[in-house]
Image (cartoon, rainbow, N blue to C red; front, top):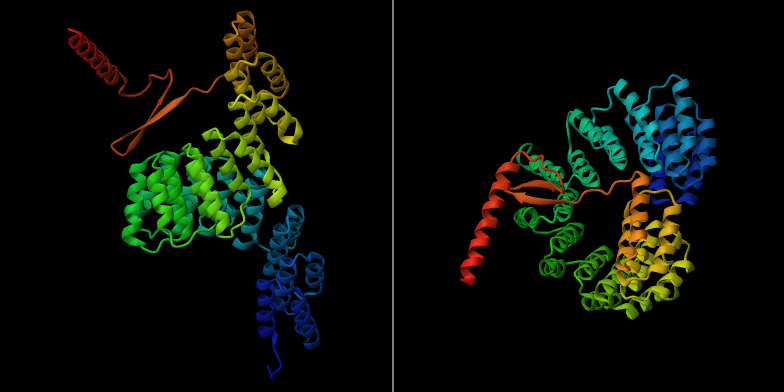
Length: 495
């Protein structure tokens, strides 16, 4: 520029540096704004605060703030958001408290940053206090605030609170619907997630985006409902011929979870572009279907296109080797994680490895790997090895692992049940009775199993031992009729 820049130009240039994370250039423009006498102007100082915070220099941001002529709500918002983004949540709340003491009323941008920090840091009480303040300021009914509050409550699996917040949003946008659909799935209410998707399309006539379809497909996969999944796929074919890679990944995952590996692979092959998530999804799909050879072939193809595998890739490969019984290849893959790719094994990898060795009856090797890694003390890892001991009848090792599990805070009935079954397989009936007595004394109850049956588009839940269904008498009569019919047909065949 040949002209002398003014405060508007400085503000725009500093914002550009902020978005591009150009700290050095931002400092130079900061120096020029001081020379020109514009650094203390509110929107220049606010832009500088945001720039320094985004670049991780909170001290410089506070220095600019202290030199501002009249700090306003935007200034405080920049400081609060900066601290939250830099994982300094307590400082963010301190600035918020100081802001209120100065008599400034927070706006929606103030609450967005603070509420997000509550969702991330498990500070439910603080989030509820903030929610109350948004109600007092009549901000809770706006979409941008309501969406963040829904996300916060869903992270704590508080579905009723999510529904209340969703209902109070006056003008729901696509993000509101996406947040609600995702919250339902997160809280394991997948049927409600699909109902919300249908309501969004057919009642409110909202135009869904890629995130909407990804959420609905995830719910279909979780319910193993290929009927709904195919309907959503058909809608995508009609309305969105150029699918986003994320939607393609969701379709692949949905078909795989519904048991249709052929459709899953067909969708994968039809995608114009693949990212690492695409490869991880299809590798996991083949692995979960017991097709270890195909999963390993896809892993080689992934390396051929020069994509670096991540920790999720190795979970899929180890699962594939486990389900296909390819133990030696699984061990090679596990050892190559750190040696070749520099990926340290996490609890998921160790769990897969222990389960794989345990299923193959290589219990001593499994125990050796378990002791080698810090995750060996985890209840899931110990439970996996205990299960393998039961399958292969190793009472001595199983007894030791069960005792280790019982020393920890009891959260599940599994150790007691597995130990009891292990004793039963060795006909140690006195020990069986003792294990059952310990289970009874622990106060834990085994969660009842249930099945979901899809009837005319709705899901009916049937729980073991629960006869409270409204049509239970009708069902029992039908079952009795079918049993009699089966008996007569069997006898007629023999006659």
